[in-house]
Image 1 (cartoon, rainbow, N blue to C red):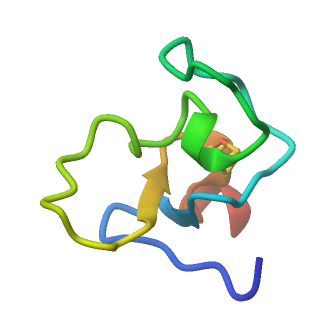
Image 2: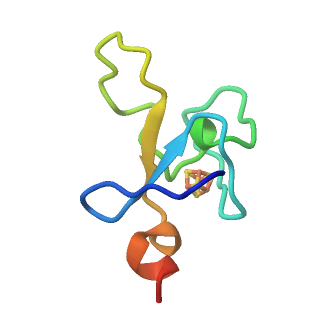
Length: 71
Ligand code: SF4
């Protein structure tokens, strides 16, 4: 991914089709592909999308936070 972007809580902002080495499939994903959308650390499936075309979420994996990366 280009430049890393973090939200106000220091969580990495991710696109649906991004993936990193910490990927872990989410139980709720019917066809788990190696993408953030199917990863248990993202909020893609729990966020209320409000019908927008926004395709960003955050990664809750502690190793990807702003603090962890910039140590
Ligand atoms: S949600 Fe986070 S841990 Fe999961 S693949 Fe994306 S960047 Fe990696």
